[in-house]
Every structure is written in C-alpha cells, then in structure tokens.
Length: 377
Ligand SMILES: C[S@@+](CC[C@H](N)C(=O)[O-])C[C@H]1O[C@@H](n2cnc3c(N)ncnc32)[C@H](O)[C@@H]1O
View (spheres, rainbow, N blue to C red):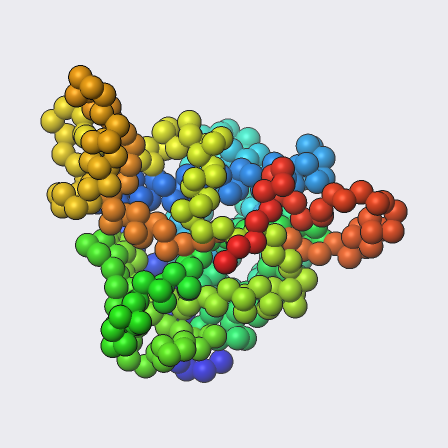
C-alpha cells in the first residue's frame, strides 16, 4: 500500500474520530437539522424497502444477518432494530466511532430488555483488509450489506475499491443485497462548471463545499484517486473521491454483484413520498414555511426560500390565505441532491440457471419493489 493512501485513510479516520457527539437540543439548533433528518429518512426508506424485499424473496420469517459497512457511530442501529433483523456486523475505520456505536448498541439493548438483534463491532480499514478474518463466526453468511455515505472513500485506488467489494461480496449469500448511498460524480463535475470557466475547482454554498486540489487532474478526472475536499457545516471536513459509476458497476460485476437500481436522491425522494410521507413528517425532515409563531426560519438568507415563496404566491386562495408548506432551504437541498442510491444483488447462479430452465415466466430476478427497478444515468 502506498504511503499516500495510508495517509488519506488516517486523515479520514482522525476526522471521524474527532467528531463530537451532539445532544438532541444541540442537534435541533443545527443549521442542517432538516437536511440530516431528510438523509435519515432516505436511509430508513432504502433499508425498509430492501428488508421487505428480502422477506419476500426468502420468506417472512427468514433470518436476517447484516453488515453495516462504514457504520460510523451507529446512526442506523435504530433502523436495524425497527427492521427486526437478527444480527448486525458493524465495521468502521474510525475506532472512536466504533466505541460510540458499541455504547449506543448497549443502550438500545438495555432499553429493549435484551430483545434486540445481536451485534459485533470491528474497527478496520475495510478498503485494506478482509473483515471476515475478524468476524466472530467466519462461516456467517449475510443477507444484506449496507454502506451509507461511505463507499466513496474506497475509490482512492483500484485495490481499495476491490477490497471493499470483496468485503461485500465474500460475505453475502447468493441472492443477498448490497445497498448504499454515495456522491454522484457526474453531478459534481457538472456543478463545477468548467465549461463556463476552465479554471473552476470549487463549488458550494453557505453550508457545504466541494474543492478539488491542484494535484487532481480534472480534464478528465482519473477513474480512481480523483480526490476532492468535502466540507459540510458542523459534520464533515475531509478528503473524498469521485466514484465513476460505470467503473463501480463494472467492478461490482466482477465480484458477482449486479446493479438493480441507481437513483439520484432528488428522484428517490419524489418516488418515496408516495408511501413515506408520514414517516417524513415524524422525522421532521422538512421545515415549516412560513415558520410557526415567533420561530425563525433555519436560514437567514431569503434566497433560501425563493422557491417556496414563489410556490405560495401561485397557490394562495382568493382571500389571500397562505397555507404552510414543508420544505428545505435551497442550500440544504443543494447538498442533499449531490447523492444517489444504489442497490446491487449478488448473483445466485444456481437459482438463476434453474429459473431460466424451468420457467417461461418473465418475472425479473432483480425486480425491486413492484417493478420499480430503474437503472438510469
Ligand atoms: C459520512 S460517515 C457515514 C456513517 C454512517 N454510515 C451513517 O450513515 O451515519 C462515513 C463513515 O465511513 C467511514 N469510513 C471511511 N473510510 C472507511 C474505510 N476505508 N473503512 C471503513 N470505514 C470507513 C468513516 O469513518 C465514517 O464513519
């Protein structure tokens, strides 16, 4: 492994290790409170949908073993509890995050009087070592690997992306799923706007920025190691790498993982609103506008609400009544919409072969959630 790559791995680990745990009150005051809730809602929907799909595939009482790859402090533990899974392997490069994840799990376990999934915790650079060696049961087969907001770190180099995928594929059952969220490289390059000004290396707004250092070639960027510095108010300030999606898809295929869905967050949110609105409201993923009583809008910049004022102006009734709507400030939406959702399925070669031979049914093996399979660019 090169010195350079070791160095980036430790920068990432140090950054996440130093992140402070915030209390509920402090989180509510955050400029990105609703954006974080919206991201959490998106993950809840991805996880909920895929668990439904696995139960459809394998029977409603099937055992469910999960790997949370790049689990951080355990932001998804509650989702695993609500999803009634049986075992979760939590892995992350940041040791302090893994300790915090362990503590959160202990609290969850205590609160539920031991009536919760079993769990194990592994502090490891999953782009450089095999986690199977570190698992309590090396024979354990997983039904789901979830890698939320973390896969882009492995695109530092081809060997790292391959090791990450090996950790996914070698632990998954045939027919198991690999789900995740990552930045949309095409969108990042488009937003850089080098067509307008070939010198551009940075874009963003008051809450986030993406900046490519001089050493990253941009015309075109390399398939691996296309480093940019990502800054998100209060939470992230560290190097990440563009994930060239066709390369990701091709590599995943080499590891027996077939792409079944790739959806940009903005499309995912629109689609999931049909069934997920109640949860969205409960999770406070949108800001009420105009604000209630003497509350202030989250952003003090009026531009952040131009879109909603325009909407309200066009939909006010004749008596001037202006309803409240749920929205997100423009700055937060610009950050949310940098991401995409992906779902891969581990090929089940025996089953697929049998199915091809024995049935003329046109049921697609990879159909997710009532025909919503979508592979778009
Ligand atoms: C943005 S956080 C997301 C945490 C969590 N998945 C969530 O959604 O709340 C990214 C996480 O990926 C972890 N990470 C980055 N590179 C990693 C690597 N090579 N191996 C394992 N974890 C890694 C970081 O330590 C961090 O906890």
